[in-house]
Length: 66
Length: 198
Ligand SMILES: [Zn+2]
Image 1: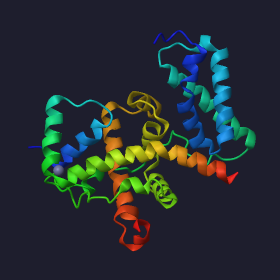
Image 2 (image 1 turned 180 degrees about the vertical axis):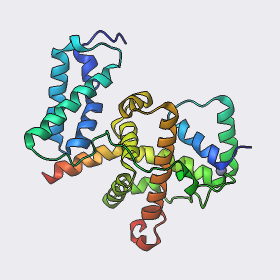
Image 3 (image 1 turned 60 degrees about the vertical axis):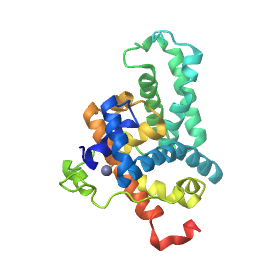
């Protein structure tokens, strides 16, 4: 059984590369039972989404200023 | 893609990435646009200088960096924005231990967030997001921004930031842990400012 520390690291990696089948299974089973890792997973995905939108937000803010 | 074949089209598809890179540093759409334009022009004119080894985007960013440096020199101003080549001092290996107990369980750990999508529509949220992003240690911030804001691939980020594979995973993971915690404290579970959620 992998710890939350290990699972959260895999959750991060999953955003950048394809995990192995056994890693994906571990993550999937773990987040079904663990609220906190599940929250970390959804929130990490949200942070990615926010980060991608940030430059657009920055640009419109800068353009409005001038 | 045939790396040795440079066409206007293969250059043009790199424009958005180059623009975001320039915008984050120059903090001005027009200046950023100019720098990208000059970069693409210079690339087009010196296509022979492209060896295809390091990858097209890495080569273009190399040119763009010079254009940005030229700009700061001309305007005789200090670069205030991220320079993308800083290092973190005293960023200890033990840092992750703030987030986990020795057993490997979360120390505290992520609580649920109410309606994150709604936050994206609020100006106040973006101000907080920016604070949290700026609170990352400089090098960590660079790596995170090159990957998530500029949109480089992981291996391009490693090349730009001079990181090993293993360092990259650790850095990105810590950046997410930190950003998540900061957004949690300052926005999503901030009991002092309930009006945000009204
Ligand atoms: Zn867990």
